[in-house]
Length: 205
Length: 233
Ligand SMILES: [Zn+2]
Image 1 (cartoon, rainbow over the protein chains, first blue to last red):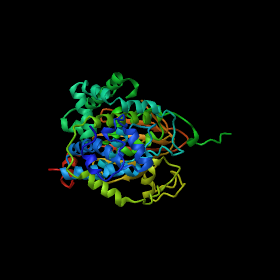
Image 2 (cartoon, each protein chain N blue to C red):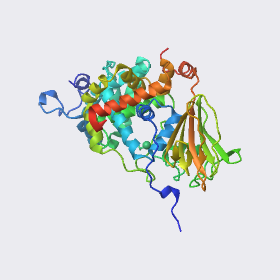
Image 3 (cartoon, protein in one colour):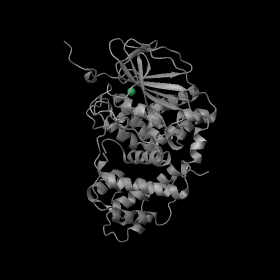
Image 4 (cartoon, chains in turn orange, green):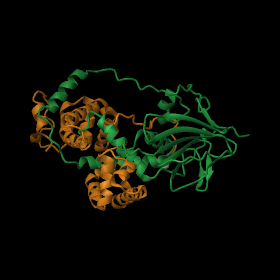
C-alpha cells in the first residue's frame, strides 16, 4: 500500500481523494504527477514520496553515501519533482524513468561533482528524426516487471555489468579494470546484454 | 552554383558509438569528457537518441525493482515544510549561453573559451600543433582523460599518437577517411591499442573533430573517493 507515512504527515490536508477508504481505483503515478503539476496537490505529492523515496534512498545508498546523505539526496530529488512536475511529459517517458533521470543527474552533480552534458530537445539545430516513438518509451516504462525479469534471466556475468553501470557509478572501462577483465570482454558482454534485452522484451527496450 | 553549407546537409550518421557508451551515458556512469562527446553525437543522431531513451527506461524499471530502504521518521513532514517555504519563486531563466552555430552540448565548454557568439569554429583560440593541425583542450581537470578539439587541414593526415587506452573521435565539420571508412559530421570513430590506423582529412575542407582519450590512471578512483566527503570509507 502507498499510504502509511504519507497519511500521517497529511493530517492537516483536507482532501481525501486518495484515501484507501474511498474505494476508488488507485491513481496512476502519471495521475499523481499531473495533480502536482496542475494543482500543486500535496496529497498526490505525498503518495509519490511514499512510492519513490525508499527506492531512491536505496539508489543513493548503493553509491556508498552515508544514511544521512542518502536521505538528503532523496529530499532534493523529490523537491526537484515538486518544482519541475509541469515539465514532465507523459508522452516522452514514464514517471519512474523521469525520476530515475533526476536521481542520476543528482548523483553526477552532487556525488561525482561533474556537469551532465545533455541535448536540448527544443534546439532547432538538432538533427535526425528517428526519435523514439513516444508510445514505445512509455510502453517500456509500463513493462517494468517484464524488463526486470528479462534482466534476471540474463547470464549472471552480463546482469552484473548492467547493475554496476546503473547503480555503482562504474563505466565499462572502470569495470574492466576492477574485475581485471580485458576491455573487449566487458564490451562484448554489455553488447550481448543489450541485444538479449531487446530480444526478450521486443523493440520496447 | 552550390549555396548550401555543411550545416544544412541533412545526413544520418553511419558510425555510432557502441552500446556500452550509450548505456553508461543513460545510466550516469560515463565520465564527463566522454559524456560530452556522446551528448554531442546525440544532437546529430535520432537513432542513438531513441536508444538512450530506451536505456533510460531500463534504468527506471531497474530503480522500481530496488529494495525499499526505510526513510527516517518525519522525513516527508520535513519536506512538506520545505515546500511551504518554496512559495511561487521566479523560475530561473534558462540562459542560452554560447554559440548557436555549434551543437548545444558543446556550447558551455566553448563559452568558457571565450568564443565569439556566432563565430563558429574559425574564431576559437586554436593552438597550432603542427603545420596543418590546430588543437584546443576543452577539459583539463580529468586525470587520465584528454578532451580536445582538433582542426586538420583538408588532405592532411591526422597526427599519429599513442595512448594507453582508447579514443573516441566525433566529426563536427568536414570529414576524414581511413581503412575503416569515411567519417562525416556526426560520425564517431573508435580506436584503441589494438587498432592502428592513419586517418586523413578529406580534401577541400578543414576537418573539425572532438577527440576524447580515456587512459584511466589506476589510482584515480580511490583517490577521488578519499577527497569526497559523501563517500563512506
Ligand atoms: Zn548514433
